[in-house]
Image (cartoon, rainbow, N blue to C red; front, top):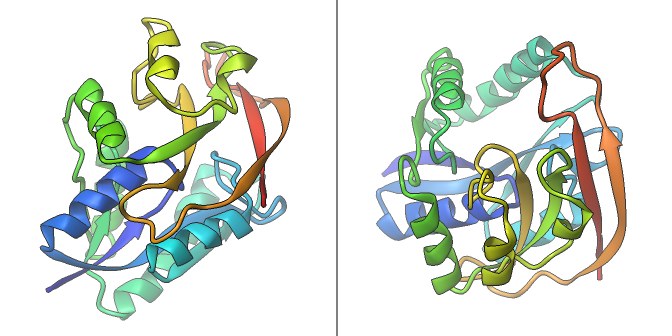
Length: 231
């Protein structure tokens, strides 16, 4: 069978994509790969503590391969570190990388170009699926998630730290993708059909973080984060 690793973000799109790729049984998916902020000890962008990430992997039943980055890493440094880390997987005969992307063409192209440099091929189980259909399938399968970060320019503080459900979706402004595919919000999945047991956590404080950007019209420079603590 084709040997593949899964790019695990801790969120809903990853969870649904992993469910689908495992159910299809066309690939031997036996490793989760996650990038981690070395200084904070948290998953990149989602800001999930490592111990909760590890709990997810244990409940899923797959080994976890963590790639660490410094908080100040440039895109060039990021790409180089990823390349060097993934060479180890290629050396172990991995030929495929699975992602939960839905419709971001530029990101998909970037991923495929970087993977091709290592002789890897990208697999996208959710690609071009309708966002509304995906979120309804996510709910119907019994997945449970909580929002852990939201773009402060599009969503206010009340949207972070909320359980992802029909009420949350109905409250979203019309300019926000229902799956948050443009980075409007990020989630932590704590239960569902890929887990052998629910992940226990507590909600911590909410914090607004602003980042510097060289682009005057950048829209993703301010985020509300909700800390999660292992229970």
